[in-house]
Each structure stands twice: as structure tokens, then as C-alpha cells.
Image (cartoon, rainbow, N blue to C red; front, side, top):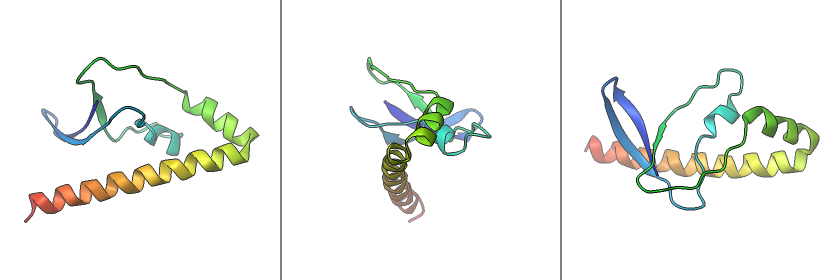
Length: 95
């Protein structure tokens, strides 16, 4: 699975590869009011995906704060890693 962003309306660039066990699509969970997605996912091979609705997860997190905390802690680590990777990509582009 490859994550891509729009460079222009007609051009997408690859920003990250997702391997087995990794997640994507968490931006809708973090900002549930707007439902903004920041990337596109493109399957490069056959994949098996699991999907949870953001509102269902939000309900679960409100019922069990510990699960919500642990889940969001993991999301924060993923965001940090992806931002670091993106920063390295930008540095390589603008050398």
C-alpha cells in the first residue's frame, strides 16, 4: 500500500509505503467534525483491510478512556514518524 498526496490536481506523489500491520486513514478520527483526508491510499498488491467508522471509535473511547488514550498514544507515534519521514523527503528535495 502506498500513501500519496496531490501535488497538483493531476499529479500525485508518493510519500510513504504502508506494510503489513501498519495503519492509515487516521486523520478522519483526529478531526471528526470536518472529515478531511490528508492522503490517498493506493494498493500495490492484493491487500486485506479492516475498517472502523470514526464515530464508532469515538463512542468506544468515550466509554473506555484507557482504550482511547492508548489508541491515540499510538496514533501520535505514527504521526511523529510520518512527519519525520516527510521532513527528510523535503530536505532531500530542497538540497
